[in-house]
Amino acid sequence: MPLVAFENVVKKFNGATVLDGLSFSVEAGEIFCIVGPSGTGKSVTLKHIVRLLTPTSGRILLDGTDVAASSGAELMGIRGRIGYLFQSGALLAWMTVQDNVALPLRETTHLSEEEISRRTQEALAAVGLSDAAAKYPSELSGGMQKRAGLARAIVRKADIVLYDEPTSGLDPVTAATINELIVKLNKARSITSIVVTHDLGAALAFADHIMLLDKGRAVVCAKPDGFARSTVPEVRAFLAAAKGEWS
Image (cartoon, rainbow, N blue to C red; front, side, top):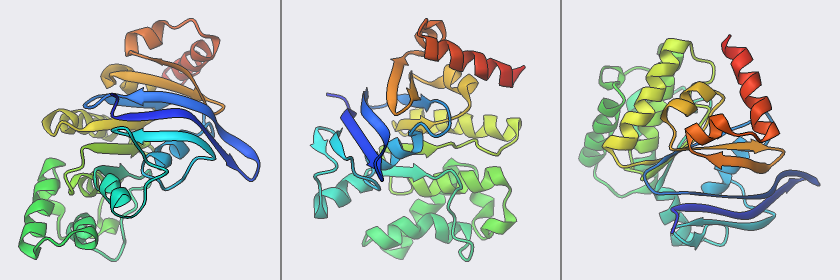
């Protein structure tokens, strides 16, 4: 059984179809990258997994449990397994880095402050930010803000992490550091990583599977080699456009 599965998911906003019968599955422990043109539903897909959005029709399954049909303690349990790195980092400006990272533990658990502090320090160390614990978001570079957001995503020991454009707006060197961190955490913590990214070169380098999302549908889902060799017209066009960005 796959860890995450979309079954014919449709999502409409004010009559406009954003996801159009989307079906795919993600196995435990893999890095699954979602690529595609802007406005094709990539971020919307992530939000369905953690039920920030619910489908108009179809099912999203986590270990066989229908996420959209869950509520109460069951939904809390599902969300407790999932970390989410938002595109903006979504740090609270008036809190220190340490308090930002500790926030999920304070809001959703009954752990002691001593244990919260220990787990927070552990998460910060995992992303290389131990020395930034007392700083505020405004004192951090863009890459450091992304790493702080990632520490918050893993602080509850999530076994699934959703990454929404983790390298957006970063210079190439910093972007490479974030991508290396995704791979490192995936292996060190046995995390299942679902990554929405515009960085096709990185996806081809580290993903276990890549899915091209276009017009709300999964055009192709394949291992990197198969994706790069695909003869599907939409994939060829996307690869050509990405190659133009690299040159």
